[in-house]
Image (cartoon, rainbow, N blue to C red; front, side):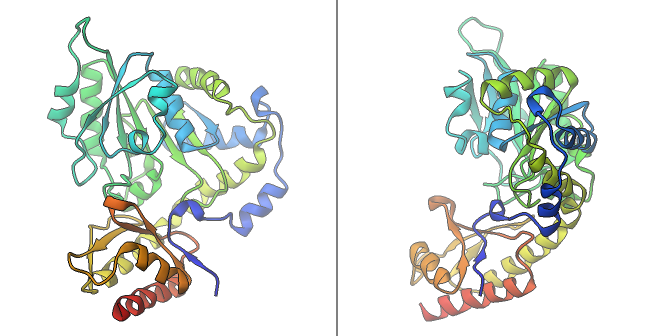
Length: 345
């Protein structure tokens, strides 16, 4: 039996349709702006986000960093959640490479930041303070159980940002999961944002890449920042070909992943040893209850012996993500493996 890999939706491999498209992709030098497949992907991405322009980048981490570099100068400050991916999991790039200070606020369980907390964090115009330039939100929110931030809330943050002359960037790595969960178009969720990045290489199955979207002027500046970071690529249309299919096709089927994640969460809740956190999209987080007969290390090893891979984030508990390559048979095997391991403990 093939390994069932639930560690992340980043493990998704290209579909056969993607591989065929990549093999015959029309290409050119993207640094010169001459790769027609890249240009088509960027045009489609901008349309899907309701923005003027877009830029293909190798990763979501680079996309977020580019956005920060465009919005902020050295010594400026960004308001960001204390559980946000750009703060926790992007190796301090905003500080190391941008000289940008993070002003962290407590993320609520649903991934939001309290509006009053945001307003209270905006610096006064004082020579002793860094200048507040940007608010950063994450949607869906990985650490907050894959929760989806709604358009109304994001609109309120956008209104607050504009009232104080701030930018709003959305780390939308799994933005299409949020749109699917909420039953809206992705562009509705980012209408109030000045910039947004989303990943093609998570649940959308493309092998590489993210897209950063914003105004024409923003993307013009982002193009320079991408080059500075080493993200300018040449015949990258072979990657964009898969990205086009990701946007046109894979975004339409994410509800299947959510349904399977819900089924997995419900099955795990029936197991006495586990505490399962709220499940919103394709992310299932859980941990052992106090006094359980085994621990995460033993569980991960036992599940691996049964052909199932899950991940463990220490204090954040364990995590399983559904995606295109997890079908009903894989889900059934996973649930049976959990039951077998926990019953034998």
